[in-house]
Image (cartoon, rainbow, N blue to C red; front, side):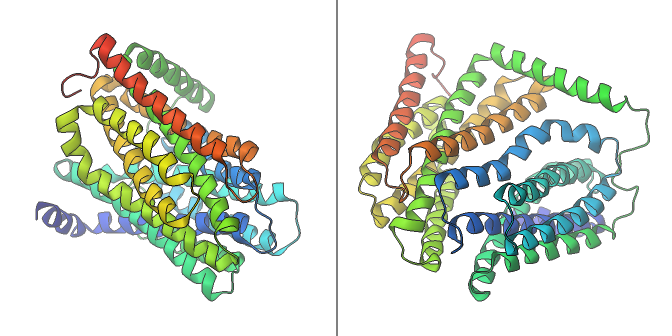
Length: 425
């Protein structure tokens, strides 16, 4: 297979292997840490998990990616990237140890969240640095395949880290502190591994830079310009609006499933964790199927037509399967929602890539990232207001179905009025 052949060629490159090792260790630690945070908030016996607590945890996990991300590049172009990996991972190892101590101590909740927020904020710099450093260890002819394989391997490493965290938690009698310490260890190993790369290899090259304040101001102005450009590209703007609403719906249902696993479907924390693992696995299977089905569907329905169909299917099937609040139908719903959410996202990514001028594409994708994560956090906040303690909420299920239906109707209406959705677009 060509992919296997290309991967073998890449792995012969010593510095690519070293950079990939830093990524895999770092992102596996991310997976461990995120599961530890989520399980401490939702499944620890000493915590009475509430939708508000879950919303706070999601904000800690996701908002740094959105708020810090657009400005991370400004600093990455001023600091040696190898040192970002070294000191960033060392800092996260120390902060993770602090988080473990806070879990073991009786401290105010805000202090625990502040520690976790610092860990996830630093993560944005490390991930952006890994992408920026890749062209320094791979030649131009192989850069495309490296850009495809390296982030994918990192995502798999994060998933593996999450699975390892579940296993360690069970072995350690539900100790979230032990899981966090595992994450701290992986961060430390990633930092040590980065020392195998020459300090100056990964750049940036020495150059005259703007003063930091001017560079940050330039970045902010660039984002505003990207927003204006997006407003002029109706196809991309409509696709992003639809995806934002669908991400909001997915976030609301995620919080509901967390509460159902914790209180309605289980009597013990271990049973609740097992059910949550099944739900996440079902949703992940939907993501995988979406990757296989979407190219075929887009070829026949067009990109917007596929997004509209995804939203329409969710509008019908989500209440049909979810209003019973029974485990079996809800797991099927988790699979279908994973499929339609990822299917719509793949199509939206393609619309943005093809509708936006290349000079603005990076800025528009930064805005896309902000919308994607803020919508998820906003959904968690809404759920905190509407969900009862056991997670059974007809209002949330029906409300989400109405939003999905509105997206589908709006997309088909734009097609009828402006012909936006015709053909392959």
